Image (cartoon, rainbow, N blue to C red):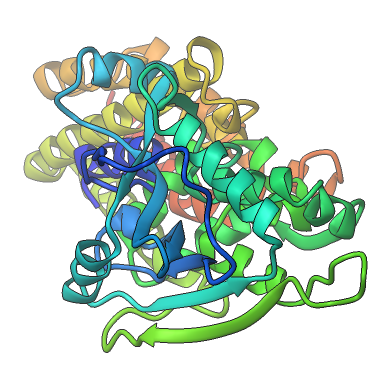
Length: 414
């Protein structure tokens, strides 16, 4: 995958995970009229879609009352690319999203036309709790309250739904799962849901640092709509009755299904990197026996690899030290893609002109390759347990091949 596409996919991930590209709507309703005994509160879960940001699903709270005719779907995660300073804010990690509401027919029609599965769960609530929830939602969906600071793992469309329900239910959800580990991490969930999308998968694997690998609780695991649905299905209220009275599949997608397990791309990335490394060694050998064309391609391709590696490393460094994307901090991938590579990238221009790499370029290649090898070796220590074997496999063989090629070509020069 080309560098610009990798960064674009990572940017889209940061900006749009669990996002919904509809504009918030308002409605005329008698706000003082309470819900009746026949009213219902339903959790709507939307399955994965085809686009990258749709792979994580979406959800909403559907409130309906046949007596009064009240029928609204409330959902969070709304954003607008055209809003003022959207891109500068998102690059810094300051992402302002909002809640919106819409009547149920267009909401369901849109998702069915998008061929995304839809589940509807009826929630066990008293009339007073239903009315408290509606007041909570109305307050959130009012002028001055709609905007909130979005976080793709900690504060998104699903966690907002979770928190709204937990608030009106007196904290029963959090109490029921308190202290229980999920056996998952934010990274493992992300990897699983991005199966069959190697480009976005790579971009996100590059950008996520060590914090994404910590085990998360069941409470935190509810950051994905599909996980929230599954966890709520087994919860009980204090009186022993189930929280979810029914769980129905309203629409079954004929295309995208939620992946059940992680598909590693290790054996996809490793042959690519190994092939590039072998290509470099061949070019280095041919350069050593006075072949001009191989030397030219060694300089060109070596410079491009060093430039790519250096630019990726620079972006990772910026994410760590200069943005609020805290799940991109403490990123061991900086040992694989390092800003130091920009030095040999410049030196390879001299290599193309003079046929020899300056000493600083050679020394920096040694340093870059040593850091990449170090990133592989430290995996034996528990403290360095970032899940980045695929990134190591993508970088280390290429670094080794390029260093060997340059040293072989240099020795042939008298």
